[in-house]
Amino acid sequence: MINKKLEQAINEQIKWELFSSYLYMSMASYFDSINLKGSAHWMKVQAQEELTHALRFYNYVVSRGGRVRTLPIDGPDTDWDSPLAAFSYGYEHETVVTKRINDLMNLSMSESDHATTNFLQWFVAEQVEEEANFDEVVQKLKMVGNQGNGLFMIDSELGARVFTMPADMPQV
Image (tube, rainbow, N blue to C red):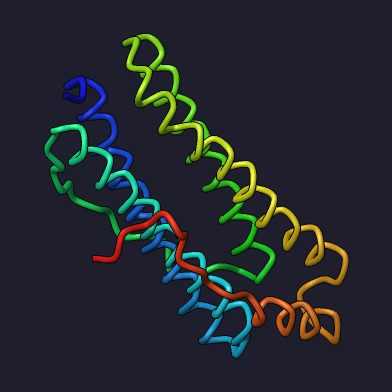
């Protein structure tokens, strides 16, 4: 049975994962509105990843005999000053998610819940990847600025991103 403190904290994290998906869909809409279809596609893939994270947490709580409680999700921002501003915002958001995952890890360790500590290791590693993915785009956009051929080349590259359902995720 999952510890009640951890159940509550993971329910809050599920909300954050769903908010992240909602935020990245909002960013996709922003990119579509300025005709950066590759960037919009990249954000849609990111939104799908966040949904799988929420589902991974959901399945974990259920597997430990807990109850998932859906919590209200705030509306995300909808406009950014530039592609660089949007990706920078996404990077900053991922650093907040990393802190939240680290806080969950600390809670699981303080509660001596070794199963949850083990489960959270995947998310610790995943957050390294999430921050690196955003930072890579931010650094490229800083090099080329917000207009011109460089921006279009980066946008084209971002459009090649592919979503792959993790092999360990059960079908819903």
